[in-house]
Length: 357
Image 1: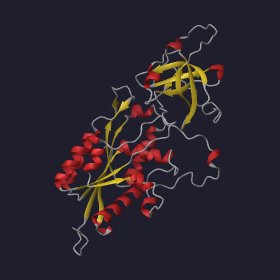
Image 2: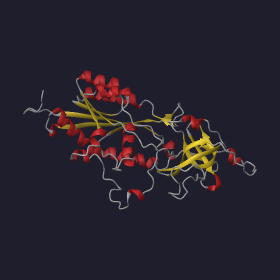
Image 3: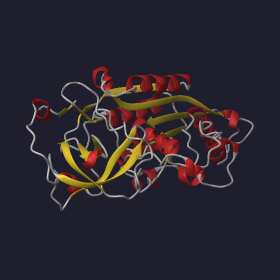
Image 4: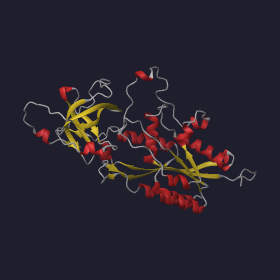
């Protein structure tokens, strides 16, 4: 039944962000999409109002966002201090959320027991669901907008449906470029099936005929006015760098980024030796032979984890060189089938004390 009558009532909208999911989506559009631009909170909220106006058949003035919440795990100050610019970047994004009238909810990151990463979120999904359900009851939202892809939120959707609250699911399914060490962004099909309104944002954003509200979803790109051709730019950055990578025991910074940008030949095989590897964290460092590269960082490839897991310190390897936001890194690292004669040198205490900070 259409609500577009003279006795229109306010459509109250509540928005709930899965922060980890949203951060990956925004990062993709900033670094790998042709727009090279992050998602605008203000623009996204206006798009949501437009969608509710369209789907609920209610004048836009009556479609108001009355609450918005953002949930994410957060590093402690001590852990954040180990990561360059982490504290500044978090504070910067806090400002964005504050000016967007979004309430933040953080829980501390905890050590990850799976070995796939050093820290992970714990309990934030439960808080997300409890808060969304409680506020839907207390504030009587007409439409709850969920920005998430996690199938663990299925019970929340069913509870909201039982309340008679319409659920709008904004979701993305994204494949990263093949040279990027990053898992695809996926959305649970069960979530999509349960939502009152399922909004496939990839299809909308890739549509050639963009409406003004869709165009405003993106911030103006910092690179939009660059005059140089795409072909003259540095290779597309790849994910994978972590600032808590190998640090020498004397506290000095590693040197994987002193190589001249653009010197690596795409697809070329280089030879080297593993100087450090941490199987639990999935990171390592290697030196190229003939002094081509020094202290390059590399990571476990989620598509072929066995190639990383079989490596040991001092193994001879073959690798290729790529770049990310911080500089060059080794990719496609494989055990080599050659032997290298090296001069006999005595090991130093520093060699034995190499560790991941």
